[in-house]
Length: 156
Image 1 (cartoon, rainbow, N blue to C red):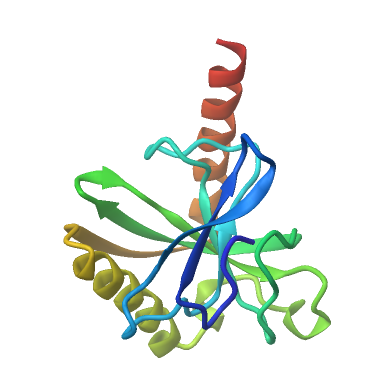
Image 2 (image 1 turned 90 degrees about the horizontal axis):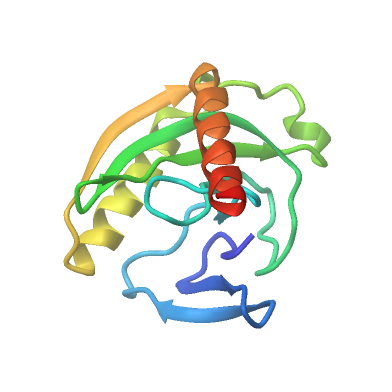
């Protein structure tokens, strides 16, 4: 994970140094709704690893590896480029072991996530379009594409 839920600090993994680095502090009106990070060994259309959010009972910390099960994807475009974000539940939390679909997440919670990105990006002057949520059946194709893109970049 790069960013714990509730944080205004946006951290990013600084690969050259092998550490987490503070990228910026978000505007005071927005805080990350869930733990937020990326899927290692993937490459999304925006040129970065595939983004992921994990629904945690307690926030973790920047740099924490969370084994998680994807349950859906938020489709959005940031400045015209696709920027999908997986929504996941942690494998280590037995209370969430029965969650396998975004249909099991309260609609207002899903809207809170979408609204976070609308607000956060617009406060930075970026244009985003939220295309909506897709359930777990859309996840595997997105993961496969991002894994293949990373492999192609490493091999090619």
